[in-house]
Structure formats: C-alpha cells, structure tokens
Length: 327
Image 1 (cartoon, rainbow, N blue to C red):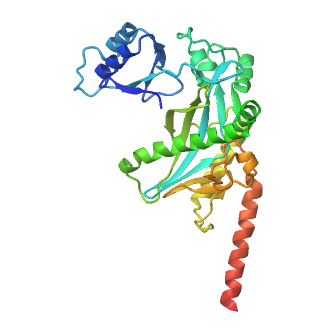
Image 2: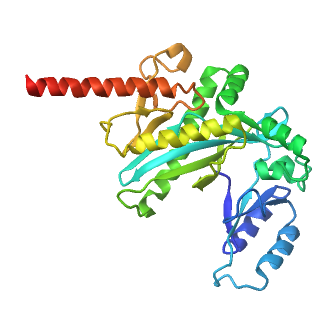
Image 3: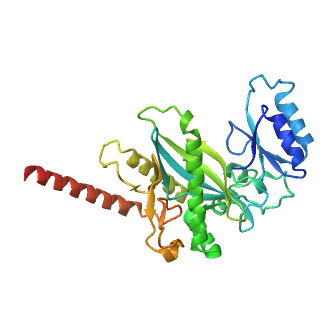
C-alpha cells in the first residue's frame, strides 16, 4: 500500500518524509467521510500547513482530534483505461476471524474518472478521484446518465481488456496478487478483531493498478454501499447479497467443505485454499506446481448453474446416507 501517515498525530513524521521526496505528490483523505468529500492533492507543504491550521487550529498532538485524516504518497503512474484513471472494487466476505475464513466475489467493477488523467491538474478532483458522486457533480440529468455508463466497467470487461494487452499469464498473476493483498490486510488485523460467534462482514476493497500492473491497496470499506446505480449494477449487487446469504447458510444446507458457493470462491479457511490449474499453457506455471489461490476474479459467473449443481450434489449425498441407514 502507499506510504501513509495519520494526521494530526503523525504530522512531524510526515514532514520528515516530505523533505526526503521533493516534488512528490501527496493525497489527503478523511478517515470518516464518504463519496470523496474532503479529499485533495498537494505538492507544497504550505498547502497542507494552511489546511491543517484550518482543520485543527492550535490543537496539541496529545489532544484527541475531532476527526482523523490520512496523508498518502500519491501513485503518480496509474494504469489508464481510455486515458482515464480507475480503481477496482473487489468484494470480500469474512464469515469468521477466529479462525479466519474469507471468500472473494467473482464479480466486481472498475470505477473510472470522468476526465483524462493529467498529473499537473492536481486541483481537479474529477481527474484523480473515481467516486461516482464526484463525477456526477454539476451535470445535467442527461449527462449524468451518460457518465454512469461510461465511468463503470464490469470486472470481466477489465480482465478481457488487460488480457488482450498483456496476455493470460500476466493477468492471472495480477489477480492472484490482488488476492494476496486482500489476505495480507485481513491477516494484519485478525489479532485485534473481536468477533461474536454469529457475526460476519462484507468488505469493499478499492485496488489501484499502476502502469507496471502492480496492485495498490487504497482503502477497505466496511458495509460498502449496495445501492444500484443502473440496471447492471443492481443485478450485480442483488446477486452479491443473494450469494452472501447463501454462504452464511442459515438453513444449514451445506457441508462446510464447499470451496465455491454461487458467485463466491473460498480464498482462506484458517490457511490458503488452493486450486489446481487444469491447463498449464493458460496458467503459465511449470508442470510440477499448478497450485493457485482459489480465486477467479473477473471470470464468468455462472452462479445459478453452480448453485443447482451444488443442490443436486447435496441431495444425492443425503439420499445415499438415507439409503445406507435404511439398508
């Protein structure tokens, strides 16, 4: 993840780092706001100092702040789609932290900025932020509808685009690495999470790619917004919620050993969950090591067919067990 400091507590440490990287671009984000509110970029320390005086006044470091902000090193070489910056929204469902059990949704989407990327335009939030609320500001109704369609790509479309440009092997490695970033973040907080026996959490991960196809973790959203912005977004989130309830399995239908339920693939179950690549020429791995993390981000989501197969398989197991008991 980008080099990050918490304000106001880490202000002195940040200024030391700032002087080591003259001319670098930094981004300030409030910890407790949404939809891009309060985010801005800067290069001159005086801009941050003026903002800091306005936000915190003469407040001492020892005094708990009214609101916490973070300042991050800005990723200056983002990967661009049609000349525009974007980030990926990936959904992770954690059904237990002790032991840790996490699922990744196959479907997600990319959020694109509405303006062409230009690092010199650091004051234009529409260039640097992908939040839909930012992109829809000061637009008439017709243009807002066009923006909603052009500023969001399905994850499968992003994967197809990247595959066409970089090949199957590089893109598979990228998505495996994204899964690794997500797991690293969950393992980092696992020791301090206090979880009730029957609790769970759906997280929305925001991942940025740079031009070297390196994934960067921007933020993790607890209880991400699930309001559909258009018909396709509604369908995606409806299916996501439906499969979340399937994974939680309130009716006790599943065996607990499933590695896929609908649109979710099991990534971690008190340890990494591996799958074997069926085609070495596609996966690009040597024949003596075909294991991969059990994730299929951006793959075709045949969730309905999979759920039917899962139901039929469970029914057959139950029928066999009944026949064995009666036999």
